[in-house]
Amino acid sequence: MLKTTHIGSLPFKTIQEAINLNKEFSLPVLSTLPLIDDREFMLQQVLVGIKGYTHKDFKISLDERFELEEYKIPFLMEDAFIQSFAGLEVKWQVIGIVTLLKSINDLSEASKKQIINWHTVNIISYHQFLLSHFSKVHLFLDEPMYISLQDKADLKEFVDDLKKEQIKVNLHCCGEIKLECFMGLGLEGLSLDLEQIKETELQELNYHIKNIYLGVINTSSLELAKDHPRNRDFYYTPACGLAYSDPKKVLNIPKLLSSRTN
Image (tube, rainbow, N blue to C red; front, side, top):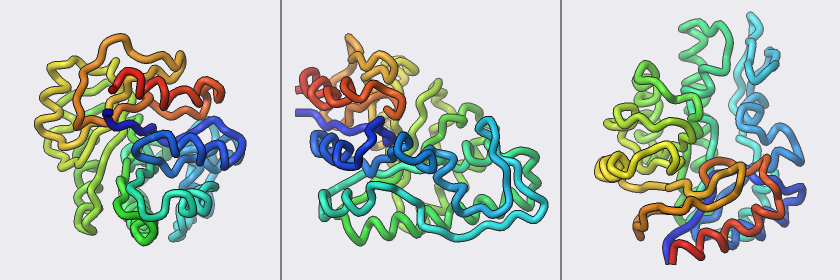
């Protein structure tokens, strides 16, 4: 049987539903539940550590005297997840630095450096917290806005800083996959949408990146791709987060993946 997991967000309105679903995957995920609390959305999750901002239309405007506070990245299901999966291998995901920086209006160079350092410290702290409860922890940076080589330098520096703390960094990108954007980043793994890549490009990526998390279920239709490569080293997943998906259909995803990955 091939390995299965999912991206991060789930559409449930109870923590127990999220726990139960995660038990059906070979790699459980510390999931976000934004339909219970909108602070669980990707961008809002980090706003709890910023004092002095406005947030409108998915963009942040910082006040002139904004402050950054070190904080524990919030997950509603944290306690229940630890109780259910303690000692096992797990996955978690947080907004990536490129997407975070692009979500902030009129960012000065000095403020940019502050944000980068602050986000790095908070990720390291939370990852170390998780390592105290689980045998192995996979960190994924969620980067829907990483689409250009112009952003590669910032991302590589960020990844390198996390790796200095012995953190193996994975990336999730649900948009177009341009090979040159991912080569040389030193990633442990890449989570991507099968529909966004050719099989020959996938083979090349796999040569340079150790672990591939292949999105073979369309997040809107929740249908499995008719044809996809079979590789026992891959993880098979939905293509993106499931916060807005039909919760009844989401319950069938582990079975759907298993039926085509045996």
